[in-house]
Image 1: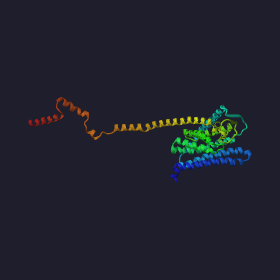
Image 2 (image 1 turned 30 degrees about the vertical axis):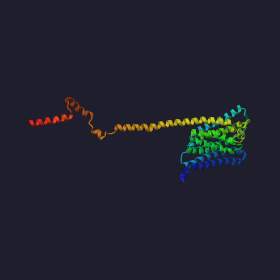
Image 3 (image 1 turned 90 degrees about the vertical axis):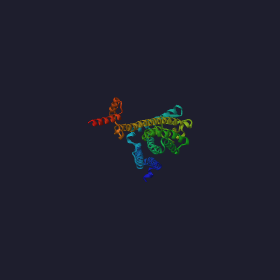
Image 4 (image 1 turned 180 degrees about the vertical axis):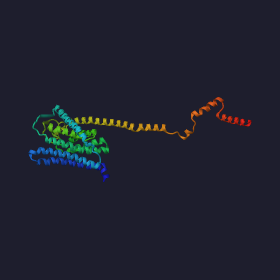
Length: 349
């Protein structure tokens, strides 16, 4: 059984189905449970349902991934949540504000007056739930496991295509709007995960974009109409307005988000290259340099071989050479002369 679950395809199918069902269940909880509560307590019930739904989504992803992969779930490390969520939310708010500003300068977007009494609960709940649920599915499962199998850029394309395809079921969706979602949101959110290797940044960005689109500017979000602090209407050709799907299908939104994705991708690749250089230096210092030093030390401390020990040293050979030089005879002649002289002394005696 363990061998079956170690297969990446099997893990992908199981985790995809589990997180998708959890996300659908969280949405049903909002739709079915909250309206049954009395009107005076409905807002509190909606907030409570949102908190429970978000917590259950994170818990189900964490538990199922832990059970199947037997590892620490680093992409949901709590210590990295505050900074990444805040940064992502600010990026999302800023990007959609740039889209509205560009469309306003082109005479396409018309931002109405401020609605001071408008409740933002429904839009906020949608932004939170979609930000958590969709990022767990498309970046936590699809991107991450496809990256294990085929690498980062294949995973980026596949997860973006999945993300765009699932939005084709929304009201007012077309093939153009699906492609726009894949390019602007799927790629952008994927490179955010690629850069920081956690889900908090894309979750924050997803929330910030949807919150700005619905709760602040009151525009259509993926075919769903919301009332926000401002009322924004669109006039002009559909490739600029996004049609019934909303400004997410506008070429302006695609261009702005693609530019942001390109910048983040460059940062991610640059950081990878820097890490690779640092890693090579560390590997060199930890392996090659100590190995070279050890070899040098071993050679220096190694005992001489038998051949080296039998060879006379230069100091022992030098007296013989000096004696030979003074007598003009070779060392062998000196030895024979010494032997004959001893014999002559013995005869005289």
